[in-house]
Amino acid sequence: MTAEDYFVQQNPQIRRTLYALHKVILLSEDNITCKLNWGIPFYYYRGSSWCYLAYIKKWNCVEIGFTKGHLLGNEAGVLLERGRKTVRSIEFKTYDDFVFREEAIREVIQEALLLQN
Image (tube, rainbow, N blue to C red; front, side, top):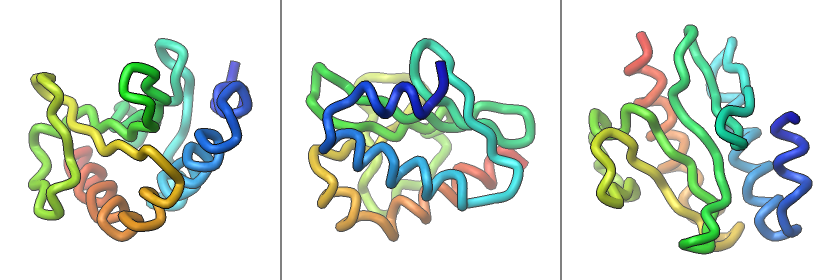
């Protein structure tokens, strides 16, 4: 199974947001790869997983999660802890949420990539 397989399993609204985030992630830096782990797309940079995409049924949202999120600054105030020790995430209820926060998302992605150096 691939990320594409995961995306097409979702409803059209969810799929649209997942594809948009997938594109932003892959275009953020050269040498980013995507592989399914635990049934969801994980993104790797310099040999380490640093973020993932998932539809979270419990919260009815798409989530981009950052594996070292606890180290991120969160100046834009978009990262959620949700009781997790290290992972922080940004949730999207709709595609418009993505559009509205796209610049902040790009900044968080760049900061998360810097942590992989």
